[in-house]
Length: 530
Image (cartoon, rainbow, N blue to C red; front, side):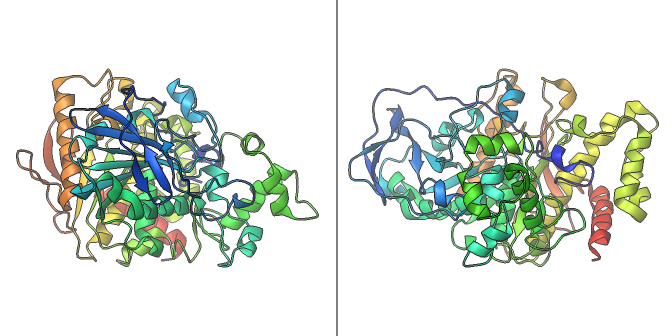
C-alpha cells in the first residue's frame, strides 16, 4: 500500500517508470575472456578505440525456481568453458503495466532472472576504477536492469565500471507468509528481492576487479523503488562493507510501503497477513496440506494472472534484513555512515495523480480528514482548493510531498548524525511530452545516464545532462560531487538546509518543501503514537 491517499490495489503503479528494452547495437568482435569466480566469460566490444565493452546476462545466483522460490539467493554453479555474455538475461516475471504504459513489448520473462550486466573501458584489471551499481525502479513489481534508459556506455566512457542488476519482483520477491517464516532458520520471510541485491553486491566484491573495478569504491544508486532499495540497503546490517557511497533518486519511502513481519501498523497490515491474503487468493483458499508446496507448484504465469495487475508489495521489517522502519534507522543515525546524494523531482505526482479517486474538492478533503484525523486541517491548508480546477495541482503536490520529499528529508536529517556528508538535489527541467507532467517522476534518468530522448535535444538538455553525469561520476570517484567548471554543490546541513537545483539553471536553493514535510510528518508520527 502506498501512502494514505491511494487504495492498496492502486498503489503498485507508483514505481512505473521509463521502460522498453533495447538490445544495443554492437560490433561483432567479442571481448577477450575474463575469469570470474564461477568461470570464464566473454563479452562484446562496443568501441575498439576506447576499449569500451559490455558483458550482458552474467548470472550472479542460481535460478530461484522450484524449491528455491521464496528462499534467499544461492551461489551460482560454476562452468569450465568460456560463457558468451552477449545478450541480456530474462526480466523477472511481472505484469505488462510498464510496457503498456510506454508502448513497448515486454522482454523475455522468467523466474530464472538473476543476472547482471557490466560496462567497462578499463585497459587492464589493475586499474581499480570506481564502480557504480544501478538498481532499477518499478514499485518493486516492475522493471529490469537492461531497460532502454539504463544503457551504461556513457558512464563507462567516463572512467567508471557500470553494473546494472535484476532482482525478484512482486510476489516472487517480497512475499512474506507464516509458513515461509516457519521454514526459515531465522524465522523470517519476505525481502527476497533485497536479498538478491545483496547477492549482486557480494558478486561485485568477489569479481569486479576482473573488469578493472575497485571493490573498495562501490557506489549504489537507484530511482523510485530503486531509491527505496538504496534506502533499505543503507539501513540494513547485512550490507556492511558491500558499498561505500549511495545515491537515492526520487526514493519511494513511506510508512505504508514498509510493513512489520507479524504486527499490523497504523497504515498497513503485517507482512505475513498480507501474504496470507494473497496466498488464499492464488490457491482459492488454504489447502489442507502443505501450503508452501501448493504455492511453489503454481506456475509463474498463473501467479501473475491470479495476482492481477497490482501486488501489494511491502518491504518487511523482519528484525534481520531490516531491524526497524528505515525512517527510524535514519532518525537514530544507525544507517551506513557513507556519503550520500538524495533528491527529488519537482512534479513527482503528475504521473500518478489520475490514480487518486477524488473527482471533487469535497472528496479530496473528506479523504484527508479520514486519514489524517486531527491533523487534517493543517495538511489541507498546504493544498488549498477553490474548485475542481485546483485538484490536479493539489494531487501532484501532495503526492510529491508525501511519497517522496518527506522521506528524502528524513534521510538527510539522519545523515546529520553520522560523520559522512550528504547532498540534496531538486530536478526541475520540464518535459515537453506530455507537457502537463512537468518535471515528472523518472524524467531525470535520461540526463543522469546521458541517454537523452528525441524531445531532449536542445543545447540546454545536453548541457544539463553533461553536468549531471559529471556530478554523479565525480561523486562515485571521491564521495564529493563537486567538480571544476560546474556550480558548487553545498553539503547538506539541517541548519542551512541547502540543495542544488538541476534544471534550466543550476543554482542553490534552501528549505525544499520543509513546512509540508513537517506537517505531514507530525500527522504520521501521531498515527504511530510517537
